[in-house]
Picture (cartoon, rainbow, N blue to C red):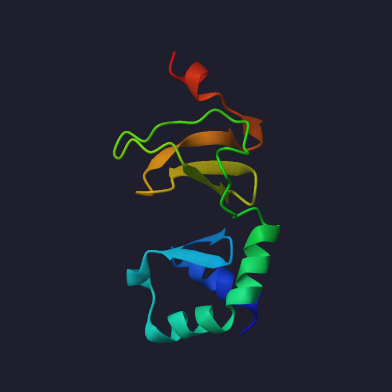
Length: 118
């Protein structure tokens, strides 16, 4: 199984991935069996490279000019962006508790969270 096939198979099964430095984050672990975890370990470097190329990398809020949203669960202001819809949309999650914060980009259209509240 190639790295791309592994990633595609697990994403189809509902596993989310994110590159964070030299760490590979994935959830929920309940959807993985022992062989899946071993394959992820074996392909970690290639998975990180693939995820970065597809834009699934943690973004530093201090370096990112987009406005910060505070999480209504844990009040953190750090977030992670996850590309969806074949890279056309970005979902923003809290970096601490992983709660969904919003859609800064939806099918290529940049959304301003302040404007969508009105």
